[in-house]
Image (tube, rainbow, N blue to C red; front, side):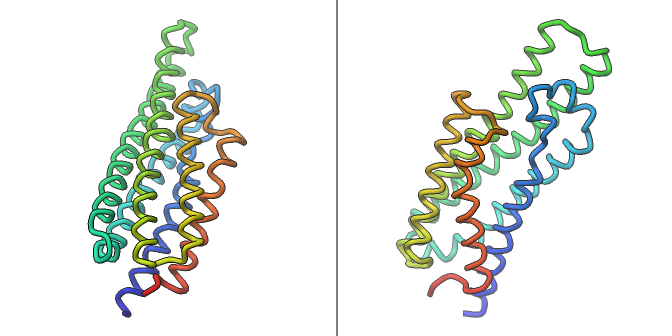
Length: 220
């Protein structure tokens, strides 16, 4: 019992950690329309964003590793599915981190060469940024969302969290996945009011879940 409560608290802390590092992994200069010029001038900001994105992936790994044994006892297949999709999302997040560094290096080269006006520079830079956005805000969030759907199904099946909380998580995840689809089809920008509003329910749910896990633990 004591071990279970301690693990629940750690999961709650890691969820808060993933929330904070996720916010700190945003690099406004890279997400700006003028990223080709601005990223080089905000190199420190971009590097720190990459560091925090890596730490966010570490938090995601810790969360599912600690959740896995509890869900496995009530729904082994769901536990394995949640574990698989969570690590797929972590892998995609790492690719996004590498591409973030690539955008920074490209911007530095662009500025060092006197910001040439050749269309090829704009084309290559835009391709790098859009590829990073599709992987980081599109496919990564989609795979994370699928993993979360499976995770919440396992938690609900084992009655480890209240039903209302599980369904709130499902609703928030559905909206986040929809936002990712919009990113993939370039219907919304990463830094936009619509994108942020569609991800707000997920953020609220994660804060509620983290608080419950820290102060109350999983239901037994």
